[in-house]
Structures are given as C-alpha cells and as structure tokens.
Amino acid sequence: MSDGEAKADLAADGDASSQKEERASYLSAEVNLGRRYFIIGATGGVASVGVVGAAIPFLQYWQPSAKAKALGAPVKIDISKLRPGEILSPILSYRGQPVFVIYRDEESLALLEEDSGRLADPNSESSEQPEFALNPYRSSRPEIGVFLGICTHLGCSPKHQVANIFPDSEQGGFFCPCHGSGFDLAGRVAAGVPAPTNLIVPPYRFSSDTEIIVGELEADA
Ligand code: FES
Image (cartoon, rainbow, N blue to C red; front, side, top):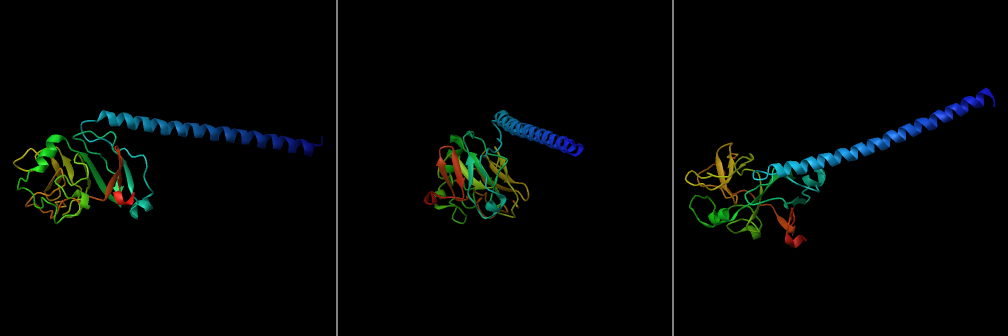
C-alpha cells in the first residue's frame, strides 16, 4: 500500500469512528432528554397531589399553538383531579385570556340559588354567557363553573377567595384587587362595585365526564 493510500485509510477510519462517537452521543442525548421529560412529568404529578385542598396546578394534556389560540382554537381542559372547593390554577389561555374552572360544593350551590339582593345582575341579563348558562350557577353542570378570569371593569385578573366575598357573608367567590370588585362563585358581580357586569362565561362543552373543551358548544361536536 502506498503512503497516500495508507493516509486515506486512516482518514476513513477516523471519520467512521467520529461518526460512531457522534451517533452514540446523539443516542445518549435522546435517552437523557426522554428521561428528563419523564422526571418533569412525574414531579408535576407529585406537586399536584401535594397541594390538594387549595388551588391545584392546571393539568393540561393538549394545547394548540400560540397562533391557533390567538385565532380562537378550542382548548381542552382535564378536570379529572378537580375536587369540590378547588379551582384549576394557574390557568391556560383561551384567545389570550385566562380561564377559571371551579368545582363548587353543595353548600356553595345552595347559596347561589338564594337571591340575596347583593348582586348587580343576578339573572345575568346584562352579562355575556352561552344560553345554557342562563341559570343561577351560570353553567351546564351545576357543580362546575367555567369563566374568563378577566374583571369586567378594566380587565385585571380577579383572585379566588374562599369566603367573605360580600361584607356580611361568608360566601366565597372572586375578588378583583384593582378597584375592589367582588363576584360570587357563579361569577356574578356584587352590587355597588366598579365592575358593571358578571364575569364572562366562554362557550364550552363537556367532551367526557372529566374533560371540557373551551371554545366549542354541544352544537359544534
Ligand atoms: S379592574 Fe377589577 S375592579 Fe377595576
């Protein structure tokens, strides 16, 4: 073999070996990446168990791209871990706006049925919601409430409050700290506060017992 041929063989061996190393490193990176995703997922699951009783992390298994969401693509919400008294939080965006999903217990539902005279629009006549939500719960299933988390005054984000949403009541609801507007657990605004109307109920439907699709109505299914 000539010197030139020997050098060419050595170079070919070097290329093959460096390709093998690159491939091994790529495979290793794939494995590590997969493992990292698994660990993040598992940690998230543990975290959600750890805070049951307060707000639970939002569990979402599918989300459209930012562009699709801006155009109003429907968003699926998994409510399988939501329990009475809890609210899904932090909240995903629908058309760039946050969504509240709350599970109201029986006591809360009973309070929503009373016309306490504390509400500005108790029958939601001046407010925005799908037709199915024209009831005291403003929802299709009494226990599950779905609202846009945007104050109808100047657009701040109200906070979930477990009690004392009205001065003389232990009733819970949502409170907007910007200018002091309170809403009950049906998103109905208190009388005499800056917010003029109830929280908006977006179009939504149940695709199963444990999943809601925000942005679609039953008629769209
Ligand atoms: S923005 Fe909520 S009270 Fe003003």
